[in-house]
Image 1 (tube, one colour):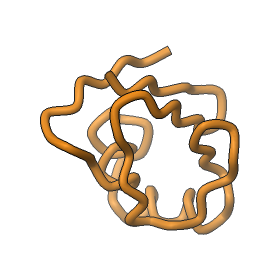
Image 2 (tube, helix red, strand yellow; image 1 turned 90 degrees about the vertical axis):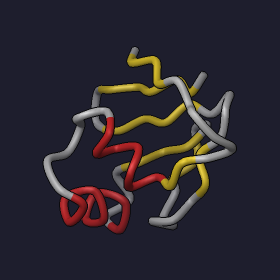
Image 3 (tube, one colour; image 1 turned 120 degrees about the horizontal axis):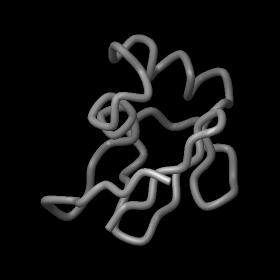
Image 4 (cartoon, helix red, strand yellow; image 1 turned 120 degrees about the vertical axis):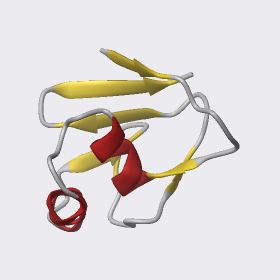
Length: 68
């Protein structure tokens, strides 16, 4: 599991995927979200600009990101 320390109130979902290195570009991140490959707290998240906050668990493929 990847732990990501949030430096503000929230981070947009596509930026989180890029910041953790799970995707190479913003376009890859947008495609992953639009294709339903990303889950937030166990639910498929289709909003690219979803505001990820402390305590959220993001799942993409085999990777999990815990936002702390």
